[in-house]
Amino acid sequence: MIQEFLIDAGTYELFIRLVVAALLGLLIGTERSLAHKTAGMRTFSLIALAAALFAIIGEQVALTSIPVSSIALANVLATVISGIGFIGTGLIFLKHEHMNGLTTAAGLWATAGVGMACGLGYYILATFSAVLAIIILGVVSYFEEKVIE
Image (cartoon, rainbow, N blue to C red; front, side):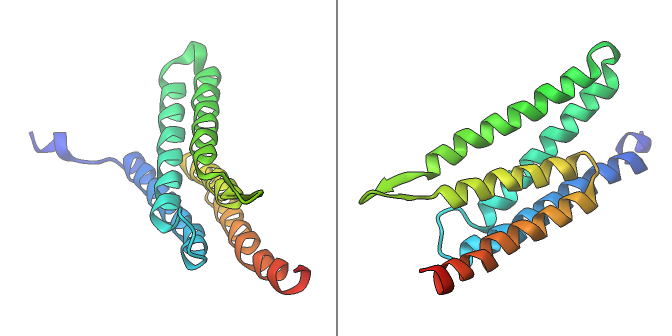
């Protein structure tokens, strides 16, 4: 009876994937929160977490359904990408002939990629991508504001 509640090492690995994705999304979203954008820490963290979860689900489906394994995973990942595009579209709006929200939408899309990488166990790739995203959102933004404008 107690064995029903025991968690194996493989399940812990999946938990770690989810936690890493959520934390990296949180880090990326921190820059957006500091910049007082609509989508911030919670949104980015949830996007990365959800993307990781969907990637894990796709991977698990691929592992259990032998005839369509790679197709199942590809379909799950493609659906995540489409869904994030839909969410991102809702963030973009036009105000006085100036487009707002595009960078935040792109950041969410990148964060979904970070989450999917975590969901598939590619921690180094996910971390490197998250660091690049933070640099692009923070450092490049500063450069645009101070040097270009």
